[in-house]
Amino acid sequence: MKISVLFKITTCILTGCMWCGVVQAQASKSKKKWILAWKDEFNYNGLPDSSRWSYQTGRSGWGNNELQHYTNADTGNANVKDGILYITARNTGEGENKYTSARLVTQYKGDWKYGKLEVRARLPKGRGLWPAIWMLPTENKYGGWPASGEIDVMEHVGYMKDSIFGSLHSKSYNHVIGTQKTKGVFISNPYDQFHIYTVEWTPDAITFLLDNKVYYHVANEHKTYAEWPFDKKFFLLLNIAVGGNWGGKEGIDESVFPSAMEVDYVRMYKLAR
Image 1 (cartoon, one colour):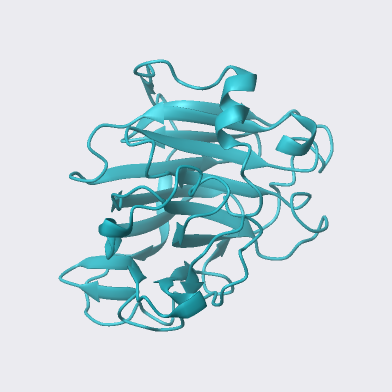
Image 2: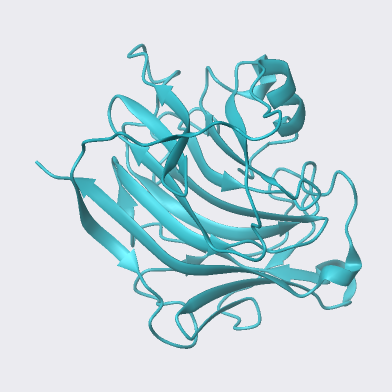
């Protein structure tokens, strides 16, 4: 998601995967049996559960010229209330760090090799916002990004109100050499309604679903790690970026702050044996 994704819009056009109208997604016909392995239902109040979540902090641009400063354990940016996790982007008006947000991670607290990740969420509304649900390798066994892989479960940019994107990154499949794996799909009312964002990850494929309907399927070609580094443990990230090469391409609407991504639950399943 956030490592280097200026390519997203042109990527979809160049590869022919940009949707034209409503994508005719098909319901998943998976016969797999999944068993719940990890979850957070957010049935508590206050900061996110520290046994499940940590924070990545600071303002470094995050490889994409993003403008937000990620805070550490600040309820103004990450707070659980009445069964919902709120990740909130704010404009404090204070110098270089005027935009604040949160980037929650499960690294070393929730790390998985294969499974089904399901997140039910409502997205923040506003030009210049860039919410994401994504995964990175717990350890960079194959080298730095993109060699060790990245799974973008859901990305959304505020100036594209009715679309989300699912993507994979690897050494062989990335925007630098024009071989990226990404697809956009139409989404209805992402700001007013909760939707379910899912990936099913097995040794043979990674499949992206929106509201339990498949819209993108990437098969493992069984070549080398350069094509498929997705045989190691990955962890989950939840965040809202502000601005950046992709998210800020059409500027930032200063009137939208504060704006939150609301997460109803996060569930990770493993395949039954």
